[in-house]
Length: 453
Ligand SMILES: C[S@@+](CC[C@H](N)C(=O)[O-])C[C@H]1O[C@@H](n2cnc3c(N)ncnc32)[C@H](O)[C@@H]1O
Image: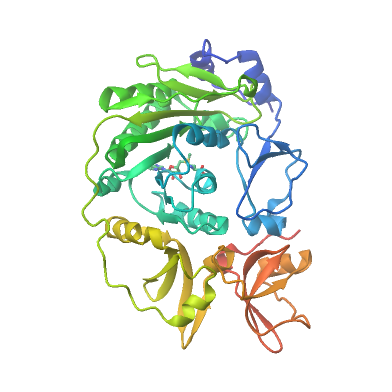
């Protein structure tokens, strides 16, 4: 059945630059679905080579049809992320608003499940630090898993309310706030969302967006960049939020250059002329999306006092270092009775963040010492810091799926004993322990494939 779009939404959009009621309605009625993925440059698998590129994203690809991602071991290895294409425009904003060669402190405030965070991770330098935050506890686990799979070591995942970040002072060079919204941009993908939409919901979302932004403003440095986005078409959640920011804080708009061929509609906010970028599904190959970029012109509070405080380096069992590829630039730190690794250049930041926030994941969790050995964590398997000396076993497609279902994997004649990375096309899926007559599968139970294909 053709979904009926809310007449109040259509009325509010008539006259907006780029909006065309007939084409907008037709694209929703068509039932057409756009599938896009973003490749992981840290794990460059030869996949989707012939797929059409997403024009505004170096790693974005449109797939002609939606495959079963669950049935693809490379998806589980973190070789790509399935992401709505319009959202990938974040890349253009970041590339134009900041110097990505600088060492940046970046916060992705509303980060789960991790679309923008995995993308930011691919764009930032190794010396930059990404803090991916999600307020909802049940969603932070998925975010942490997705960030682990992506493989970068320079990431911290937090589970905090936006107001907690004002404890840091003006710490961040960039804050991305992909705010919760009324979701009209997702009507084509999820027609059920239409029944949840109302003008009252827009008002509530707008109030919540203002609260979130007011809470996070102190954590931005002077001259820092705020990137605000929603998947809503409503001015109250988009351009009017930009005006509200300029009214209440010291902020100015940042213009982003856009190729006319991309079909993106540029808008201006009523009061301050803030530049906004709208994505309509009848003009772009993607869903509804809005993004704007502002610079903080006002002074920021000093960064909190604990920053950089040197503490006694904890004693680390020497066996741990044998598991790491880069012994020089990685520091090892305790996490309860386990150990983690993070770049040495981020050790002070980690201590600082630990003293202010609830950290769900920091760098790469390496595992736990039992007896004289390390029981390696799954995060270490899918990271890129594991020593090249670690045993590896190449799995066939059937073996890989069996491993990912946490079923038995049969020992091969070539198997060396001990902890082994189970790999598919060179990409690690997780750990197994090879014993003389069997292999113990250590793939995390909560991640295992439950589906039969
Ligand atoms: C649009 S989604 C984020 C999607 C994510 N950025 C991505 O690209 O995968 C908005 C997120 O904001 C979170 N959220 C909800 N209420 C919030 C609040 N009051 N403060 C901060 N985040 C909130 C939601 O749990 C949700 O994960």
